[in-house]
Length: 329
Image (cartoon, rainbow, N blue to C red; front, top):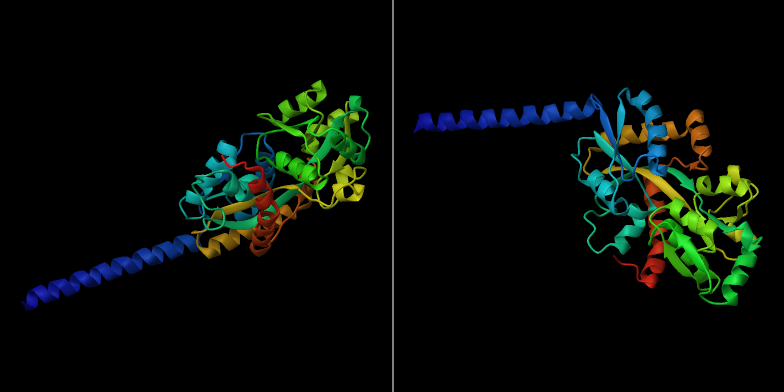
């Protein structure tokens, strides 16, 4: 009997030692982070705005972390596939991602069966950039200002069509909010991409749109488009001559696009802190700022607390509109 008890005691001691050793190894691994390649999931395709941001920032952040950061594009379902993959990734700090308004705010009200909770499953590391959409018309329309567009919209309800790069996109929502603010009505025509939406405007199938500046500015410079207003809270440096919606006096609304870096909420806090600092510092690097501003993006590095508060503010801004439009998919 005594022999059995001794064996049990030895076994329990060995198990405890193994557990302590395993826990110590885990702690050591966390403290040694990063000691291998890091993966950065982008929920959109190569060449997309989040993809460009990810590559610019990752190049700089990898220098601080002394590890390569490899971009992994996971497009589909309005960004839900890639953003869900970030939330479900192994919580060891070697997978994080970038995402945008849709998957982090809009989609929880647009999709019935979202397989992640942006408020519980993801940890906000830092905002990356904000970027206005720009409301534009064809120069052939003869419309010269946002006030004139508003007058045309209200003159004959539902006579005008507006182009969007997809139902529930930021472009769609800011235009719907604008219509609501001026008590106007127009028909949303969704396309599968920004270039298709833009082509419809040039062809005259739609009469106005709101898209990213990088898509519109070249056509405005060659005289085919008139840029009426940018949708951010303030003018960006690269569009200093284009007023904000509020500045036109037409409506007091804001609807900028934005991107931010996120990671699984289960990742150890010390790793989150290290990664956040590397990204924050990268976004403050002059060469990164210059590269992002060249794409009409304004770098907006933040603390996790500031990013979380910003997402909550965006949720309060867009939830009532999305629900009023009955856009659930």
